[in-house]
Amino acid sequence: MTETLPGRAVDAESFRQALAVHAAGVVVVTAQVDGIPVGLTATSFSSVSLTPPLVSFYVDQSSTTWPWLRQADHFAVNVLASDQAEVASRFAKKGVDRFAAPTSWTPGRLGVPLLGGVSAHLICAPHSTVDIGDHVLVVGLVTETGLEPGGRPLLYHQGRFGRFIPHT
Image: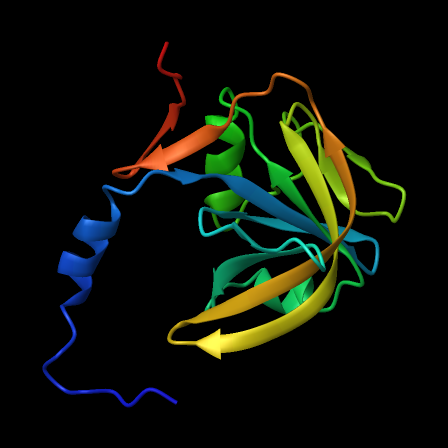
């Protein structure tokens, strides 16, 4: 275990500003618990392993959605397309019905809510979780995928959503 060294860590605002220059893909993690769809926006999504196929994301320990998500038998990682900034914002807000219109979604084969218009879906079974700092690292075993050919990702950079434009 790493020992915390007082005075060695940067302050939260300096850390936040440094991380803001790193562009990140945007996903919405969805699940259904007791017939109720739940979901949240995450920019901390990444692949973990090819064999077995594992992915991860982080969720704030104070999240009101996390207690619901952690109960789910399966969850979906919905990789947002470049025109879905509004969807990302809606699933990041508190106190709103994230699945009400205009959100487009359908229940997947396992009952997991799948958002419409996304670049990809990854259906996952919970693999492991670890409390790290003020977040929870969530690792999922990918059991199913669905791709939308030619989809371009939504990116998050310096506090704003944007689109990827490839070099020619």
